[in-house]
Structure formats: structure tokens, C-alpha cells
Length: 511
Image (cartoon, one colour):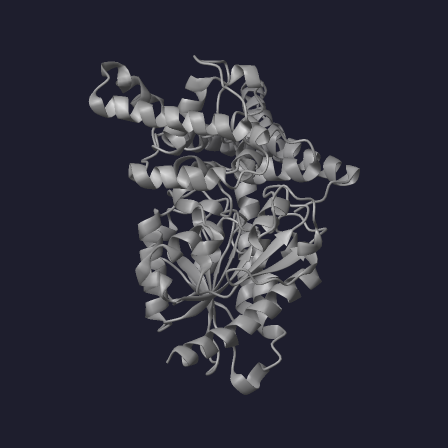
């Protein structure tokens, strides 16, 4: 993640401008060349490239943009009793009620947020319904009246939380409803995808050099991922799961557990390659005990590719379980970053694979306190100002498949995790003090068992244990910067190496 200095701001804005202006320039040059055909080799090349960029915009981006607006298929809502329990649990963990309401309503004035607006928000948040379902309430069946009564109860709860009445009727405010709102994406030129392909190839060379082996999906599925992957043509190993590719470093240790790593939104494993290689590079037990095996999954829809939608919760967990069973792993140390913590939550909720999850290292996790607006707002709705915010907005938030993944496959009530859910696991949570996505101060206080309204900072210095959770606090790190700094990578690797032995010891104690 880039910093916030003026030179970095100018650099990232220049990069974004160059990429965004390329397609309009290409369209203009094509029309210009119709009137005045090219007279030199350079102009001929420029025309050919302009035709390619124009065709890519017209024939790939525009049709896919329309198709990706298809409404989300929401999971069935929890039953009413569980919804009420979830609502009250969320209200207990809101440090700033007015900020909570304001951010979910995109910074609207309090007078513009009225009871019907709040009911619309909770119709989405608690009942998994959008505007189309709301319009069906005109007939007012018994079920409709019960639903409206429940929504009124949520509004009453918010009034208690903020300590004031909310005016009746409907105001002008619009709330952030991630899986109902439009999928907000921006065009990427063909050149950008060539850059992604080059970075992917260089990452593959680096991983292969460090002992990792790519397990690809079928050649037919490879054609459904653009840019096409050169590295997949040079491996004979096929994935043990039909829709998930991964890199595997063979597990030869006899006394320690292997590692399962799930990345976040990035150009695949590019941001993590050095970290993965250093897990064994800095291993003090070294050759005497053998090497720690590592499975690093590749989640293509969050890797800046043009591909199909992300696997749903059940299918993702099923295919990960297939990979673990295929390699004979009945217990692993699970490490995940950012969006990968969402998949971690799903794994813990799925019995068949949850029993294979041992100690965990959660790096910049987005799943804690997900009922608070920070993660959703900062990633999808914030207007960027600083350099790192512009980088996040253009290169991640508005990427075609990343935007679709979050807007059509991100269901907060399925993704949220509470620290009580981590019982029975040794867990380290790594947080950066300058994270531009996660409110790490609030998450850290929550994990430490400190009053979230308290200004006490002593918890940052303590390697505390609460529900099996320990903390790595990096005061000057932004989101994902822990992988860019040597001390950050070493600290994470040290904790993972510790857990690989600890997990095996725990198994022996149980036996």
C-alpha cells in the first residue's frame, strides 16, 4: 500500500490518469484515423493498439458491466429469534452511535434520516431484502405486518442507542446497502490486464524458485480467466479442487503442522510471495525437522482478473476441504489476510473443514465488528482524497470482479465473527495502526476486552490472551503494509512457525 506523501499522491494520480485516459484517446484516434489514414509505422501501430483498446471497451467491458448488475441471490435470513439476538449483540458493540448511523447513511444529515429510511436499511441488513421485496408490502398480509413490526422494533432499538427520537416518515437519506446497490466499477484498459499478466508471471517464477508448485485448474477453466496465465502451461500438477488453483510447497516436517494461506484483494499472490518464501527461510529447525508445507490458495475473482463470480460459501469450503483431504492434512495452521478472513469465518462455520483448522493468524482481518460501517464504507463508498485512498479506490474497489464480489456475494451476517467464536483455537490477530479500511483501534479494544469508548492505549503493548487471542500491533502500518516491511514479515512468520509446532502438541495432549 502506497503512503500519503505529496510525491506519492502525484505519482498515483498520474498512474490512474494515464490508465483512464487511454481508452478515450484510443476511441478518438480510431475516428481521427478514418479521416486521415496512418502514414508511418508508428501511427499504424498506434492505430492497431487503439482499435484493440476500443474493441476491448465495447465488446468486453460494457457487456460485462451490464451482466454483472444482476441482483444478488441473498441467503435465507436467520429466524426471527436469532435476528433479534444478532441485533442486540451488535448494539452492545457500537462505540459511537451517531457515527454508526451517519456512516451507514453515507454522511447524511440527521434530519434526513427518518424512520422509513432506517427500516429500509434493516430490511436489507436483517431480512436480506431490497426495494423489490419492499414494494410487495402493499397487500399487508399477516407476514407483512409481522415484518413491519419487527422493523419498527429495530428502529426503536436505534433510538435507544443514539438517545433521541427519529422522526417519522421518509427523509432524503440513502443508506449503504452493499448487496442491493449498483455494482460500482470502472473500466480498465487492455494494457492494464497485460501488466497484471506480467506481474502474475514474475510472481510465479519467484514462487517456483522458492520451492512452490502450481496446481492449476483444467485447461478449459484456464481459458475463463483473463489475462491468460502463462505459468499454468508449465505445470503438470492439477488442482485437487475443480475451481481453485493453488501453490503448494511440499510438507516434509514430521513434528509440525502445514500451513493454509488465504490471500486478500491483490494481484493474486504478488503481495505475499516474499512472506510465503520466508516462512521456511527463517525456520530455526531447518533441515533437521524437514520443511513446513504451505498451501497458498488463489482466489481469482479478487485478483484483478476478468473471470467468473466467486464461489459461494458452501462451495468454497467444500473445495478447500477437498484440497486438504487430497494432501492428507487433517489439521493445518490457517493464515489469512483481509478478505481471506471472510473465507476463514466460513471455514469455521463449516463442520467438515472446521475440525481441520488449528491455530490461526488473522492479518488485517475485516470480519471483526463487521456490523460497524467502517469496512463497507471505506472500501466501497468513501470519496478518495489521500494517495493510499486513491490507490485503493481505483485499483481495488472499482475493479470489475472485486466490485461484483463485494456487491453481490458479501453478506455481512454470514461474514461477521465474534471473538467468542475463536474458542478452542490459538489465534494471533495482526493490526496496523494506520489501516485505511479497518478501524483497528476499535477492533483492538474489542479483542483486548477494553471498553471501546475508553482512550486507554496500554493494550497495544501487551501480548494479551483473551479467548485464545493474541495481538500483533504495528502502529505505523497501513493495510497490507505488514507484508512490505521486513520486521512485519518476520513477526508474522515467527508466530506461524510457533503455531505449527503448538498445533501438533495440542493434538498429542488431546490424544
